[in-house]
Picture 1 (tube, helix red, strand yellow):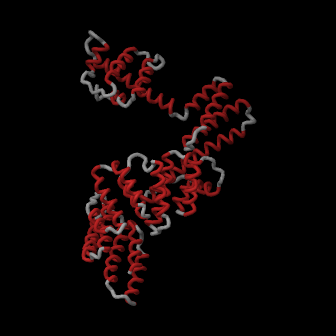
Picture 2 (cartoon, one colour):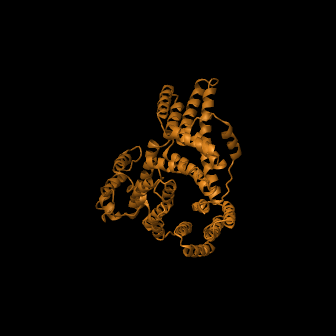
Picture 3 (cartoon, one colour):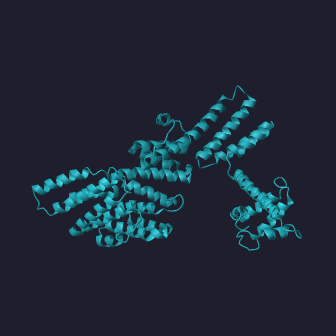
Length: 477
């Protein structure tokens, strides 16, 4: 009995929910079997742990049917009935507390019974509740659409030829709901297509895109935001980023937590692309401000902090010399990192910060103790160690690291060719840097530097800052 589906479900109920469930089981509207009521009262004595050895089919049988021989099937039937009631109870409390369709079903029944005065009062009541909602997400929009539909249906019965304005409102509210859902789907599809090279059948995408580019009549704040997110993800233009930044300030209170998080994620993605693909630094401060805002709102995660995200936030802050903030972030979230990755994460973060501060010996010590399972993160550690060796003038170690790095890339099957090619370019130019650094000043040296600068501009991406670092070192020669 302890491992039954019934007990598994009951364990999840809070004390207040158990009290409600007791009323539910005892209500003749839902249950007329007194033995099921008796079974509930017997089992609830063991709540919430249900770890007592006395909770067996035999003990239940003796309690419910004293003096009678234990009947396995009789007890099984009763526990099955109670389990069915428990499932119905969960659906009932969800319907009562969460269901957006509760007002719809109530109004439909009231209209069916021609209770017009009560219909009008109920419509007014639910519309008043909606007007007080601060979060204007798709669930709000669906409730608004359902309410508009009910009012439209009611007005038709009163005046079939004078209900056109209600029909338009009904359509507009449902259209904004449907459009918002489509845009959220499109955002994910576009992202997955870029990240994972998976092609979706994005039905009506071109028509929807034409609409959001040309209309200024959308009302729902979340819809307005996601319309601009789609344009940002597709076109990657600064104007879309700054428009979203403005919308985030204007509509922050109207967005649900998950939508604010997704907005920040897409804006961060734009900043990351400027840095990683274009090797641009113009959006580094904007990137940090997004992380800072999330930190201030305690909205850095949806769920638990994942260690790759942990590393990214520290790097974003470090790039703009926000070391105190990075330290504050580390102290707040480090205990959320899984134990098997925690120490490597901390070593990497403090090593990265030390490298940015010019403390290369300290950085090398910390980075050498960052032992990640991910090959991409191992690659990042190698990039930083090579840079530390170069800064300290350890030329032999640089050449040895380049050789080791090349062999690592040849063996690795997880890093894509796109990134491998960039790292190969980076290693070649890093090796040439050592040679040119030793040349005496003059035309030959300047000629070599110019050639390396041209090669650097042809490096295909700036992952882990490799292109920016090469530019910086060449400018120092």
